[in-house]
Image (cartoon, rainbow, N blue to C red; front, top):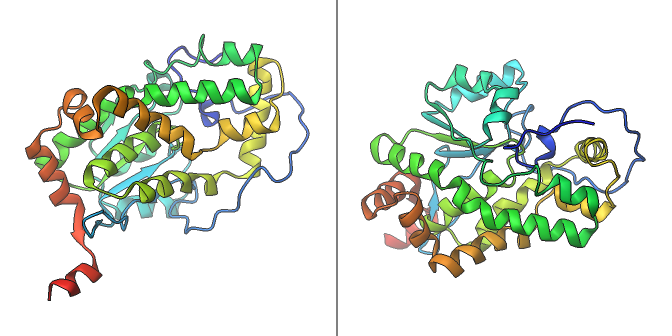
Length: 298
């Protein structure tokens, strides 16, 4: 049976790549990707530029990128990465994930790659895989994923503190990534967008865009790996929840923050060193008027 490190987050992408457990193909679980693929090796890589704020501005393009781990880039992928002129990469995988799958390619194109070891506070072993080995029903999976999403904000807060320092000093383009680019990265980016003033509908839409990158092959691979680890095959509905993203997952993070801290800004002030100066610096670096708002001012 495969072993998962104690600090590993339960992303399918991190599980052992090979397995001998046969599994039937489940038609219809993957969704066709409709948006442009910027990196062939990382379909979940994207620029969050263009998202609108409530006050009529938008996020500048080519300033903040989000992704899954970039592990086997093709020459064209490396050329694209170099063209982004990244000034900071925040690797929010756990230490074991980063050790087993080093960030070699990213280190070639960015001198400042920070590995933040996000995973220790969102343990898989003992709270995730062991529980699912006993009960992998959809209700059990949903409860566990909700619990994880309530823990992610605190887990990613140190990475956001590093980002606030970076923006205040030299706001060069930044990449945030974990292993699959959907849970830890999804929440971290959502919190940044929230304090930028991006509309909640747009934040959720960006988070859900990850679903378009999840192929049927990736889901099947994840299903086989889970069968090897937990000793059983997941029901289709449970597999969809583990492999994908849903609006109610992200809502768990927001609900926890609002219950404990009233607002995302208050949470980040207490846990990530956000100050008024840093917030204004980030808004200045990442926001711009839309073409519509500029015309309205004339």
